Length: 439
Image (cartoon, rainbow, N blue to C red; front, side):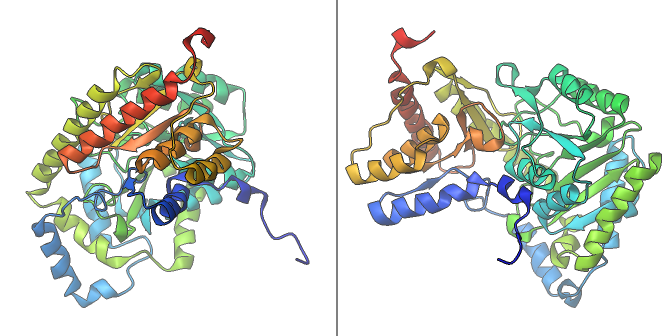
């Protein structure tokens, strides 16, 4: 090319959750291995049945010609008023419809949130972190992500001391990302932990981004604490949507709630830039917005969520029971969302292998994992030997080796097969490290 056209941040864009699909498809096609998809959090693809009453609401909305039209740039006024009223009744904020902006899914919102920051301004991410956040933030900055630790030895809770020190000694950090409930770990944070993070943000005059897409998918005795409930006078943005909750991922419908923008003139300007970025695009999809008040406001919705949470609780506990006694891993119960993250203990990682009987397939996999983190080796060996497709934990912006797996499988017998098979392959993989070689 006449000029260099690729931005320095382009190299930071990565999404292993879907990148592994091409490999799995090749294995399925060329080696006739049936793939069990545990890589992506799509409840519908895993057999979730949408209730007829939700479908009927959507069908009625489609009959309305307005569902085919543009909507206001911020989103439908009646829907934003409904959401503002809902959050004001639940929390200690007083937002209006003007503080809510709709996007074409949270991926769209996340991209805008980071791209509109000054390049030298950083948002510190949790580690592990959801790839869309960490990649978008790093791409915006043209540098690797800045992170704070989530502790697998403490239920994946944030290490707030680590967060404090990283912020104190890096003045480029202007914002803190929280994902609660967390993807990829399934952790749910207490009010105490969230209050500590808000106090840090307040001390250093930072804003908070809180991804709350799973805020109503919480179980195992935990209760969700929303950012709006603890934000105080700190500037913040909450990200919410319908892709996981209704669930309707194909709708590509998410929104941001902006808190305390009047408290800081610079943050107010930033919030307005989010609106202007949507103004250029005209608006987000109309139909999903039209049905949100009718679905979320329906008397059947709470019982529907309760039923789903009961199912995920059952799955979380069963998965934990199967994996908890596998030597060489750290496995925590999930308390929210529908994922489980497993960590390999370092002392068990050396010359690890899983048998792949097909030599041609083994050679193909060996080439893929050469010079890659050892958890990618496990994931690709698991895929080749069983057809089970999970995601390496190192692809979630962490140095911890392990993997993320979903809790979505609807069939009880297949779910047990998946996790028992994973446990068996973990034992094979980790047992190849000679105990005499462990520190």
